[in-house]
Amino acid sequence: MQHAPVFLDRDATIAKVIDLIDEAAADGAELVAFPETFVAGYPAWADFTNASSFDNPKQKAAFAQYLDSAVDVGAGHLDPVITAAADCGVFVYLGIAERSVSGGSVYCTLAAIHPTNGVVGTHRKLKPTYGERMMWADGDGAGLRAHDFAGSRVSGLNCWENWMPLARAAMYAQGPEVHIATWPGSPEISHDISRFVAMEGRLFVVSAGAVLRDEHLPDDFALGDDMRDVHHRYASGGSIIVAPDGRILAQADKHGETIIYADLDLTEVRAARQNFDPTGHYSRPDVLELNVDRRRRNPANFTDGP
Image (tube, rainbow, N blue to C red; front, side, top):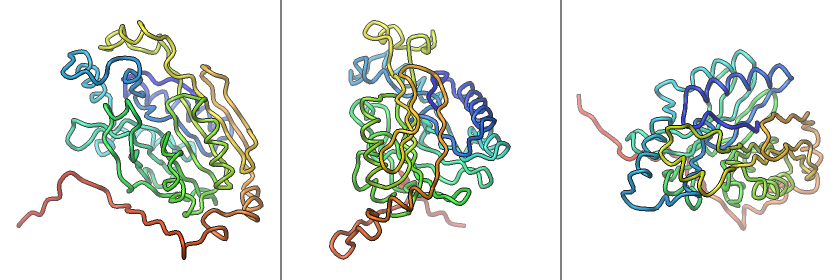
């Protein structure tokens, strides 16, 4: 998917997600991927305003709006998407701004939604990048899991996690054939690494990036005027689908809202691994070892009595 969210409006963005799932499924899609924190938007103001200014009233108001629009998975906010995935028989990777248990922080989370089993994974971004660190808390390894669907195995990472060698290795070790990479919308950053991951992992890569322009900012957004003063286009898409040999199978035009499609022949993955399998016959676990902690990190653990 390469679309704009209904910025800072969780319910309206989820309604748009459902419409896009229906459209993609009607055109034959079985696996659908949305951009990073698509629900309900990437905090682009961190890059275009003085987000690190301490006790700035407008920055605080913007963050409060972001918290209000964030997703609480336990509260059922994703239930309509789960229903749509089931009705359409598609596996959905959906980027969400996930509200923490404390209610005062946000995780950049990639939700994996199986058409039969519902939410099978919520991967919180391991390390927010640059200005994102003003908006998002650090995630953990609990979501570093590949998932089975329709005779294939799929994996997913958020944005610059795809540049992290050990995060990629953790996913390759689980044998995915299709990898989802989600982005805020920057082809200059996402295209090269998408092709690299495809060739390194010998798998298909589906990269989904958003678009965001002046007209997508709500009138009541606390930093809308500040953003418009310095820029008018904040995300340009960059969605792309790449084969295991680096061939570009589909690519979206910059700034356009569209869905791109590709038929993926998984025999290409097996053929490509004949001469290179990064965590198989071309690995040396006796020399190089990776340990991955997949425990969910909670701020407090409670032991209650009777």
